[in-house]
Image (tube, rainbow, N blue to C red; front, side, top):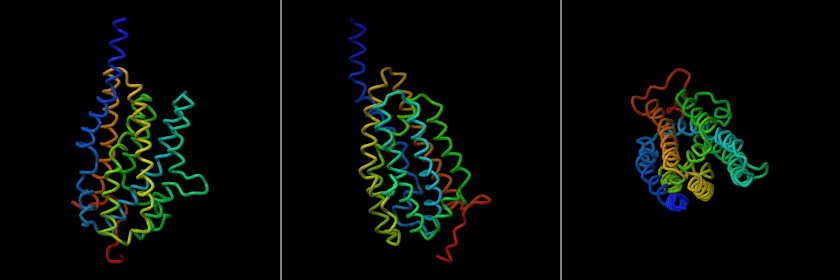
Length: 253
């Protein structure tokens, strides 16, 4: 009886503990503080640097439905699968309304690059490929709890998206035709984050499981940060794109 009461008390307190710890991780590790994003929000990126960002980020966007399908396939709970498949539709579209992937292609076009370049993967940084594949591998091989918890970076994304929309419109008005992706995520990301947070809090019964969930969130933050590190190194400082990578043509833009 005592054990059962202790277990109930621990589970009852788990959600506030998880939320508090998640917020601390997000404040420290989420990529809103990355120097590349800071330059973007200050209006200090060139068109070519924004092209490189949109091109490389498209590769990440294109793999989101794949990682979500991997997470969905690992669950034996029909209710979970019904809820999670919304994410795939949000990015793939439903055949009538465009999804996030199509919207990101329009952002690529707004920077002045052809969508075919993004679709082909031509010019993507090697580090982008490695980081994105690491995310797909993570959700495919780690526990289901860790896979779901890794998505909790969405808890922090709305604040960044609001700032990004404001600054992109202010500093780069020529991108206005390609910003639909971000407006859609203002509602999609919080909905997804609420579901994932509730699910993780419900299933992380022990301190070990909670630690695993927090470690998964840190790992996802590291993956996002690594992608921006590669962009910064290749296109800002020292500005050394590797062989085969996209090279901006600033003179022609």
